[in-house]
Amino acid sequence: MSQTLTALSVALPLAAGWSLHSLRLRRRIEAARRDPLTGLLTRDAFAERAARLLARGPGAVYVIDLDRFKEINDNHGHAAGDAVLRATGRRLACWGEENAGTVVRLGGDEFAAVAPIFSRDDLAWTLSELTCLLEEPVHADRHTFTVGASIGAVAYDPATDTADVSALLRLADEQMYRAKRGGAPWLFSLNLTPEGATVNGRRAGRRGTADSGTGTAA
Image 1 (cartoon, rainbow, N blue to C red):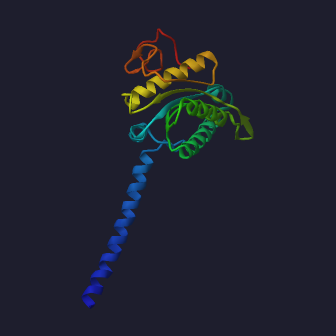
Image 2: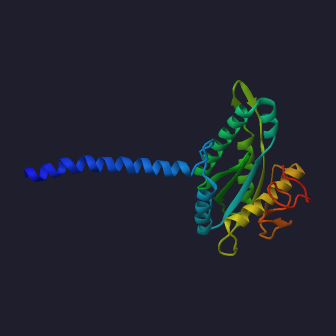
Image 3: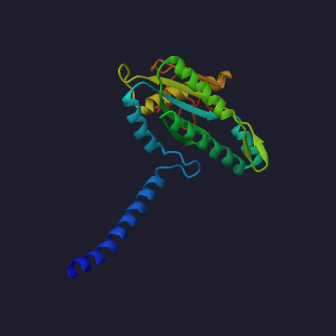
């Protein structure tokens, strides 16, 4: 009996220490999968979750680009811009949870999301909901900022369509750019064929592509 108690007295602190180590390790891994400013998923983590979600049934991929963000950064400083990004991240994270979706900050003032949809009308309703959500004022440092966004989306059904997350983001980005250029809050496509040229897997003219002759992204 005494030997058993001695063994337990040694094992319990070791087990507790290992559990604490494992918890800290899991937290570090999770932190590495999150954008430090907004707390949203990084690209790799998003791509994994988005692929699993889209494999389950009909869904939509959204690309969101904030409007007037550069103006806020230029006139009020990066602290104000960061406050807008954090507020946008919180709103999109809540929206993702409510709609069984997943959200990522792609970089700068650009975000993306994937969520299930049930019909074309459902997609249009969701886009209107997202527009209203992102148009709500952001209060920071005794200022009120109204940003808004241009949103592009593409519908996907694994029963009839074949495309990976990267290709769907490319198509949604194309719709976002069309919306921004045309002054519409959002546009979506049910067609998985790109309407414009592609450079290095991205919309031609987008920042980071080699071909800048077809225009520049906002």
